[in-house]
Length: 261
Image 1: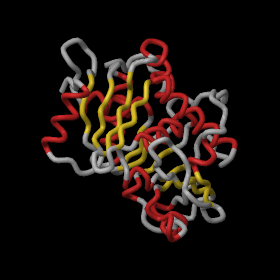
Image 2: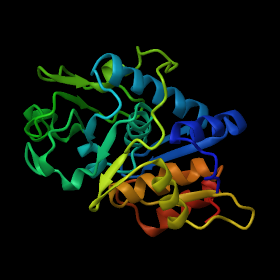
Image 3: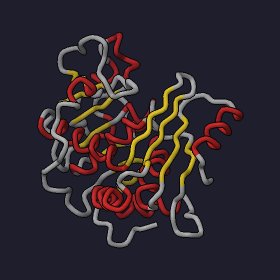
Image 4: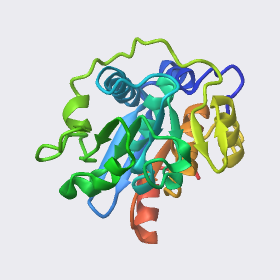
């Protein structure tokens, strides 16, 4: 697994695209709905760049800002969650563990951005609004990344309705080396610490690569490490099975996708 010389997650991700851009990076399954979405490294980066442009140009996010993703608590393994994390890291935004945010001033910091899922659509995203961020984005989690069937309330940006019109290339300056990227469990981690965590979490194969691994989402940070950071650093890919699935269904998916572990 490559860690030395990786200046940032964005640097590592784009290096992965240069070498294996057309290969799968994230294959997402939701067996309860029959959804399967596969993103190559190149396609994933396209979504990341569009999302970063949206965050900067429409939501006024900048390096050093703080984001909370309830989306990562409710849908840790969804491919849109992973896109958001990568986009925010590209900008240099600190992502706070969503399980540690309770109330508008949890931890003494009011977030600059909240990114939530579809669960609160019917009641106008009350819990997301209660976090008191200056910007809120809501994700429908439509299989094709589309928006909600109707308008969101004032002050809540419909991610799916807005992201596809964003530029395909992110041209802003990359995040500064050493900028804090994740806060949780009593510590703040920069990219070097996150890369070490990913290496410690998942042993590489004998050939030094990550392979094509099956991931069952757990808590937010562990899922980001196993489902995004480790495959990028290890020239691998993941098959994420999200939501309930019996052992037979998991085994069938693993065989069809030819997972290596």
